[in-house]
Length: 338
Ligand code: DAH
Image (cartoon, rainbow, N blue to C red):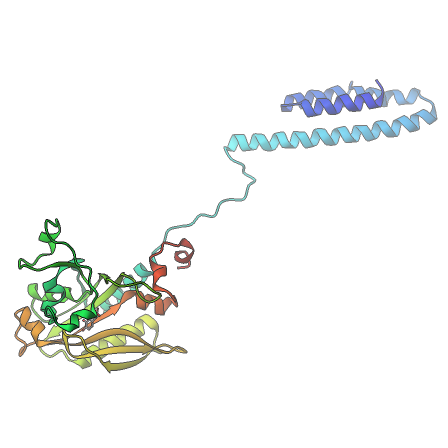
């Protein structure tokens, strides 16, 4: 066989080897002690000097080339067998694992609870399906009163509604999705006597168009503290303490008069963080006498303050989120930043 033939058949054999053993026998056949190419190299000594030089360099180059090809192929067999024995390619980079974590609204909710618990408030909740009495009438917002327009309401068809029993106070009262957490003030006072201090975190609903600062469902925290001499000064302390714990010690405050039927006087609280502008964060006031009447408290014997704030808004301020809709659209690229 001349070198060209040896080259052809050896390369062919290497390409056709489908197992490590095949490859090993090709190796032995051409490069082994008694191999074809080894034979050629041995017989060089019988040639003339000129032939020896010519054929010798070709034969050596071929030997190197074959060794290279065999090595390469044998490496690829080794990788393959690694993959098979581990069940996967151990040399591939791993996939990034995302661990679950709390939604920014859950985080702010937990923080708000913690701060109020530290001030000796209790956490209370109430139904999301409410009736007209608790959501409006008992809060001094009678039917046909223009103040009802402050809350765009999702009314529920109550005929045969399975939830009717759950939410109905027993009187003929239309069902709705609560527009604020304030009805829980009434529910709580009906069952408890002062003094007490509670917060009510919960979900509320508004029948209105969405934009960057409005959603048709969002979260509020209601607060209510009632006793024999609870005053606006107490309110001011509690709310300032709360905001400093949530936003840091440099918060500034502005208390403005505001109107809500269930408080008198009513006010709105603005805060200002370092480098920012004034932001309205809550409505509040001293509980209106009619509200105490509705729960059979004597308005001459007790007094207290109430407040309500948007949890979403607190989260937007704290985490610098520009659009309330981000909380609800399920975009993981947003959620994973928290
Ligand atoms: N319920 C009011 C709202 O959703 C917020 C509010 C204002 C709650 C004043 C209060 C309060 O308890 O005293 O717009």
